[in-house]
Every structure is written in C-alpha cells, then in structure tokens.
Amino acid sequence: MTKLPNNIKWYEDIALLEGAHEVSAGYIDAVLDGAPETGHNKAKIECDHATSAAETRRAFARIVRELRLDKGLSYKELSNRLNVEEGDLRLMEEDFSYRAAPRTLVQMAEFYAIPSRIFLSLAGAVHEQSPVEKEAVKWAAHSAALDVLSTEQKQILHEFVRSLRKGYKQ
Amino acid sequence: MSRPCQEVHLKDTESGTLVPAVLCEGLSDQNLKDYEHLWRPLLLDNAIRVLLRLKPIESTPEDMHWDWRNKLVASAQAPLAFREYAIECEGETQGLMQINLGLNNSRLEPGKPLLYVQYVQTAPWNRGKIPNRRKYALVGTLLLMTAIRVSEEEGFNGRIGLHSLPRAETFYKGRFMTEFENDITHQNLKYYELNEKSAAGMLDNMKKMGTQHD
Image (cartoon, rainbow over the protein chains, first blue to last red):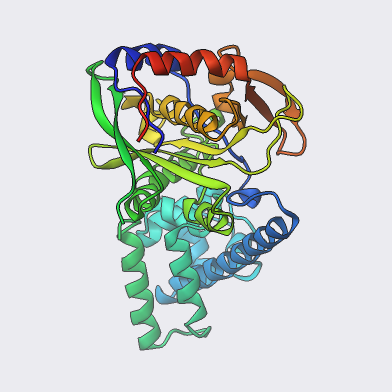
C-alpha cells in the first residue's frame, strides 16, 4: 500500500500545517450522502430517504399514542401533566407531517423516562435514521393499532421502552 | 483477510507528544461499528444540544448524517474507482476517508485527471468542539497526505480535488490548495484543488523524510 514517512520530524512539520482546524470534505446534505452523483443513484437515495423518514414519523406517532394509552391518560390529562396544548398532542399522534417543538419532546421524554436524545431522534428532529429509529419502525410495523392496549401489547411496549432506555450501545 | 496497514503517528494534544497509530487501506467492520456506536451518538447528542439552544447553531456537526456503510455500497458498485482508508489509535477509529480514482478532471489544469477526495471525516473528539478538548491532531492531514501519495502512484502527479464542508474551509484556504467559487452543482460547497506543482513540493518532502513503497 501507499506509505507515508516514518520520520518524527515530518510529523512535527505537518502538525504545524494542520493547526487547530477541522479537516473534512464531502456532502453536507443527507439526501446526497453516500453515493456518486449519478442520476440513478441520486433518485434512489432520495426515494429511500423519503420512505424511511415517513416510516419513522408513523412509528413515532404510534409510540407516542401507545405510551399515553399505557398510562391510561386522555389527551386532556396528558396536556395538564406536561403543560402542553392538547391540540399539539393530538397532532403528534394523528398528523405524520406535524413536527413538535423540541421542548415539548423533551418534556414528554422526561415524563416517560426515555432519554431525550433518543426521543428527539425518533421524532425526526434530527437528520438521518439512527439504529434506534430503525428498531422503532420495525416495532411499530409489527404491533396492531388499538384504542386500548392488550396485556400482550403492554408487554411489548414495555420491552421496547426498556430497549430505548438502554440507548445506542448494543 | 487482513488489510494492508502501516504505522503512523498522531499528536496527543494534551501531552504534545506523538503517539503510534495505524493507517489502513480498506475499512474493517470495527471501523464501521466505531463510527456507529462511538462517533454517531456524540454527533447526535451535539445536534440535540443545538436544537435545545444549549449550544450555538455554529456548532452543529456538518457531517452528522453520514453513513459509512452506505458509502461502502457505492464503493462496491465501482471497486476500481473507490478506495477507503482508516486511521486507528488506542483501539479506536480516529479518521475515515474515501477517495475516487474515476474520471475526475482538474479545473486548474484542464484535460488532466485528478484524484477526488469523496469524503474525509475525523472522529468528533478530534475536532475541538465535541467535546471541547481535541484528543488527537494530524488525523485529517495524514489522510490528505495519503490521498496525495495515491494520486502520484496512480499517475495523477499528486493532483487532488475536494469539496470542503464549510467549517473546514479555513484549513484548505490559503495554505496549499486553490479555492474556487461555491459549486452550485455540489450543494454550494467550495471546491479546492491541489495542483501538480504544490503537490510536488509535498511529495519531495515526503521522499526526503523516508517514504517507502511495499
């Protein structure tokens, strides 16, 4: 393979060149990241990102709904607990395009004892799908939507929330 | 199958001393795991602090969305064009780079090919912002020096080009690369190119300092 010098003086010289600056190059936008700019790849990646983002939003709406039902709370009761508008809570569960304010998400995460960074990630408040989001999508796709949770659904939800609390380390 | 690797040195910014590291051609599964489990949570955490206004917007990581597994998929589709490098130190991945040896033309010397640096990324702890103290210096520079050496070996005479992320512009600007206007075909990022003459000086210096070939 290509070899660089093994001379200490050379490393000291280039350390001066680098200074304290960041060194990075690439794309700044997630849509184009990871593939050469050919028409086919670009279109495919745009499509993949749009699909995964929509899936994540649907999964997040399901999770928010089931966490509320698990506590046996109505919209109004949760609204009072969190000091958040009832309408915002409805939108979070019913409108997949709705983006809740970060502070609302953090309050909700604290209420359900889920790390806020993971909750924000699930909400799509940050770019790119994390491993946790992928798990959320899988989980949401395999559990049926009901107005009242069954015992089995509760067990699944509790197991899922436990896995969220463990964070990213796998 | 083991990857070809060589010993290099990074600068420990706390002690100011050079510490041994390895530069490897090709990414290992551990490099990808380090990226996903060590780098990404730090980048994500920093982005959330920006969202919550605990940190200024300027500290948003510009590369937090990168997915190196995805980059390898693109690389596998054109294995002769793409090549990856990793720098490891103390058992952790410190920097990653993907180069493109496909058909990329010089803007400074029209008609001549160059090596295009598709991606260069250093670990969050080597940037001085996430966290606030930088652990190792030299990671990005060594990766770029590698790109220049590969360019020479592939017959491009050291010519390299890249699109800099905004916060890295200061590094390239006015040092050794020529700055072009913002490139509207590449997310409006600035394009930088190292010409043959500037590369020759660096390559001569490397040779004087003992560059070897396998």
